[in-house]
Length: 446
Image (tube, rainbow, N blue to C red; front, side, top):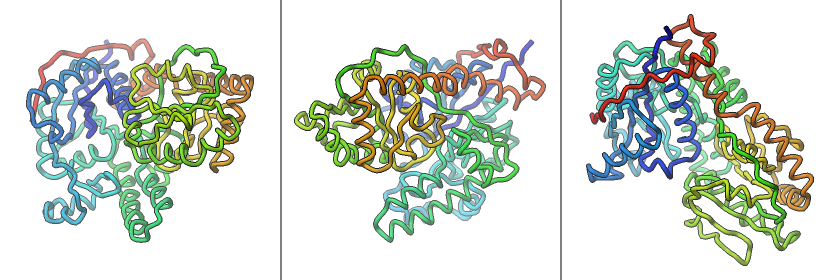
C-alpha cells in the first residue's frame, strides 16, 4: 500500500482574501498545495502579521474563507511576526546577538528592497518549532526565503525540506539597481543584492531540494551553490478553451498592479508605447486587468485606455484581446501571465525580461521587443493582421500545453515529493500520485 505523506507548508503569504488574491505568488503556492495534497495531508503555517485585522472574528473568518476556497482539510496555524519597520536602521535595536549570528547563516529575507528578520526572530522560530513538534510532518515545503529563514534557526531534527525559489531575490534586486537613478539608492540596492546572493547560496545548501521556475534559474542557483540539488517546477496555468480571435484592435495587460514591476510596466506602456500604437491605429484599445489598476489614474477613454480593476472572469477579458502585452523590465522568476495568455490562444508581445525562463520561441510563439518603438510596432503588426495573430497565438497555445499544463506540473511535483520521503517510490506512477488522504482537523492558532 502506498504511503500517505504528511506535508507542512510554511509561507509568509496568507491569502486572507482568497477570491481576490489570485496573482502569481498565490497561484504557484496553491498548485504546490494541490500537488502535495494528492499524495497525503497538508497543513499550513503562515508567518503573517495580524495587524491587517485587529478583529479576531474577522481573522477567523479569513481562515475559514481560505479553507473553503483552497479546499484545505488540514490545520492552519498563524504566527504573527511584526510589521515591517518603516526605517532600516530601526532593526539593530530589535535584534540580539543570536539574531545577528543567525543572519550570517542565511536566516534573513527581503521585503521592499530591504533585509529583514521579521519571520526569523527567536519568537517566530520558537512558535514554528512548536508547530512542527505538534504536526510531525514527513516533509516541509518552505515557500520562499522568509519561511526558510525561520527553519534555518531551528535546533530540532527536521524532515526533508523542499525550498521554493520562485523568485531569485538577488536577480530582482540587481535589476532594480540598474533602473535606479539615485546614487545612494543604487549603492543600497547593490549591498542588499549582494546579501541576497549570499543568502540564496546558503539556503540552497540547507535545502534537501530547491525548486526554481525554469532551467535559466536552475543554472543561476547551481552556480551559486555547487552540489545543491535544484529541480525545476515551472509555473503553470489551467488549460482553457480558445475563444475566437476578435476583429477589433484590442490589447490586454493582466497583472497585480500593486506589484512595483507591474505598475512600472503599465505606466511605461500607457505613457510611451500605446500612444505610438494609437498614432497608427486610432481605434486601438488597451485594457488593464488587475487589482489596483484604477488607482494608477490612467483610465482615459479618449486615449483608448480602460482600467478594469479586479476581474473575476478573465476569460471575458481575453475574449476581447487581439494581443496580450507584458512590458516588464525587472523582477525574477517567470511570468504566469504569459503562460495564461498562451493557453487562451493569444499572441504575446513581451520584453526579454518579461519572457525570461519560458520556452516560447521569439517570432513564432511570442514576439520580443525591448524598446518602446519596437514594442509598439509589434503590437500594431499583430493587431492589424488576423492571420499573424492567430498563427502565433495557436503556436503559443500548443507550446504552453506541452510545457506548462497544470496537471503535468502537479504530477511531477507530487512524484518529487514522494521520492524525497521514500526514495524507493521515485518512479511512482501517476495513478498512485492521485491518493487523497487528508483528515479534517480544527484550526489552530499559536
